[in-house]
Length: 149
Image (cartoon, rainbow, N blue to C red; front, side, top):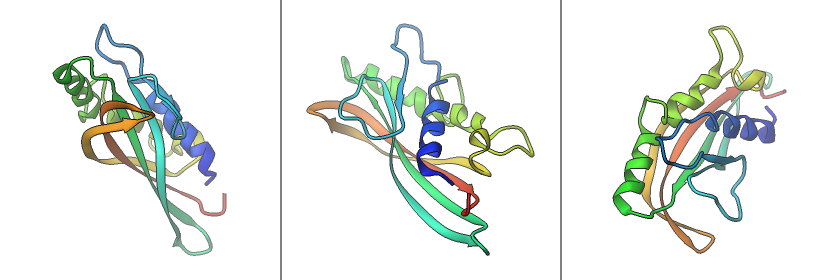
């Protein structure tokens, strides 16, 4: 798998989130940005396990992604974040990103990987980024695909 292409495909998938009325559109980047325009989703660190199948047949990557929400009002910001972290609904990052799995029998992320799965949410807390404070969380995304591609 080509890591940069996978990062961009994850960010592109997240761009389809539909936030509640009155909120700015979710901005998304494939790398950790210098500064954010909230609400913002980005692909951060990753871990890679090589050779999950013989002859470089399969690699497994676990991406740590983050979503940050500005806090004009603490409760409103947390409600917005909760909607994005829900397992379903138009604002659900899990549901939206997993649409990039493709139809049964198709490769995920436009052919870049065999499959992907948004596994869990962690780190729900206040984050400082570029001198500003946001409420945010991490979503862990597993991506599997050919190791020799």
